[in-house]
Length: 68
Image (cartoon, rainbow, N blue to C red; front, top):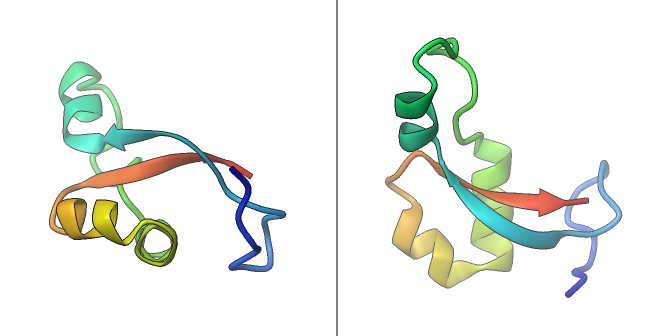
């Protein structure tokens, strides 16, 4: 499923999964604490493209994995 461009740096969004960054960090304690978290840009894309997923995960450190 390809979506219209919603930003200037992608040709489209192809959803392929969700990352729970709390679990990623728990499995990889050597990762820097200040990196690899949900970004505001990613959260905005999720809100626009997948309102139900956004509503369910907006308070979690999760992000959609996409192929641009």
